[in-house]
Every structure is written in C-alpha cells, then in structure tokens.
Amino acid sequence: MGVKIIFITDGLFIQSYHLDDNDYLYYNSEIVTEFLTEKRVELFMKGGSKIFSEKIVAHSKIELIKIFQDANDILRKDGLSE
Image 1: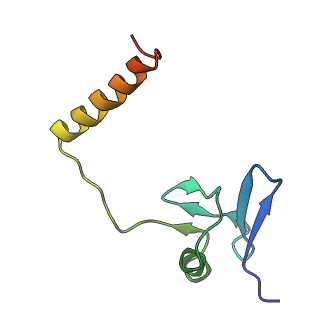
Image 2: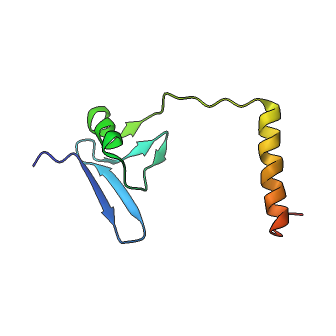
Image 3: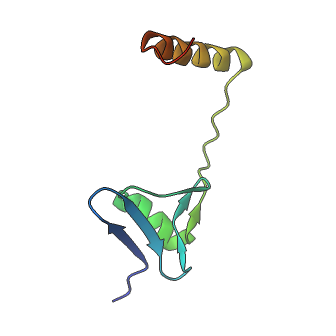
C-alpha cells in the first residue's frame, strides 16, 4: 500500500507513527499528538520521523519578562498565583 505514516486514536488521544523509521513522529523534539495537514505529512514522508522547524523565534529579555508578567497576571486573576 505504500503507507509510511499512521495515526492511531481512541477518540481522545492521538498517536502518530512512521512505519519506515519504526518510531513516533517528532516535531521540534516533541511527539506529534494531533492530526497533521497534508503538507506537514509530506514533510514527514520525505524527511523521516523527526522534523525540526527552520524558523527560530528569538525574544529579548524584556519581551520574555513581559510575557511572563502577563501570564502571572492571568493566573492571579484566576486565583492560581499569589
């Protein structure tokens, strides 16, 4: 049949597997746990079970502090942080 990639689900959890590599699919070192677009599936078919994004997101120290402050404010609002 020429199938290289399979998705297995129990209705709640999804696992993806590369048959040629006998390994789970990994995207940026994390196991893929969702259905993929056709384009992304093609990347795994051509590149194997482990794919890394070429796009690198770099944040400055000030940007990261702002992101964490915003997250902390949300947690405080919900009563999950002091």
